[in-house]
Length: 338
Image (cartoon, rainbow, N blue to C red; front, side, top):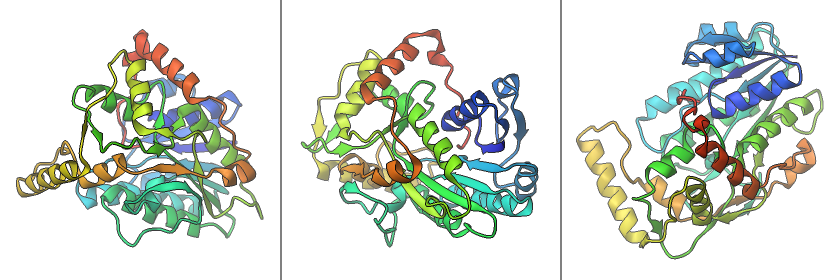
């Protein structure tokens, strides 16, 4: 099989690439950055912006399946900075699949597409898209997810996966952010709400399982699936596990929800008035994320994808600790708008 992986040099993209190569598939990667390690592994690399329509369409030529992983992820920023890669980029991928007769499209979505600012406890795929969003990232990912699912048909088979909080060795987003802010982190409120997460190996495996089940009349076609560890834990229990793997002390201090939300509003206002582009220390979206439960029923993924997490959270933390202690701890790939 010949596969195209958008964002192939990023955290999840590279893990998918490695699994495809390991089973003998031919792989092409499209990414904004240059990743010599991919070329050394035998990957055909294309350096281009996902919003470049002609480049994306050309990259799909000769491929049987596309793993669309590339996106701009974040909790702050101008809508246009998210719409261009997340929505226009996805439209380009769909156009490329249509132009070259690609039969399978696996899209990396996010549970945030159905987050309405309230607890999500055991939510399944029947959860609706909310009428409004608190940040540009979930809004643009929701638009893109709906476009991918609507594109199913006419020879193209599509599926969307919603992995939550991907982490593990080589993580270039979640783990580094937690470690960098270790001394400044504060719990919000007094209740440690449960959240789902997913170890990198399990997230990559889920994508290949979804790919292998795409086909005419398949149950997965045109559907979205939550994928996670299937073992929700307290958010701060998970954060402290990551900090322990890095040799850092746990987060023990907390701030009231009201105080955190007030601070977020002040920070957002100052950044907007002063036109500060960098991310504020706190945003309303982040406050809601850190103070609500986010765990999901993955029965559908187990049933339709044959998905079962093979690496537990505890084992994953051990592997993360080994990586952080080794010289490879500085080998995290640069962020590639993935």
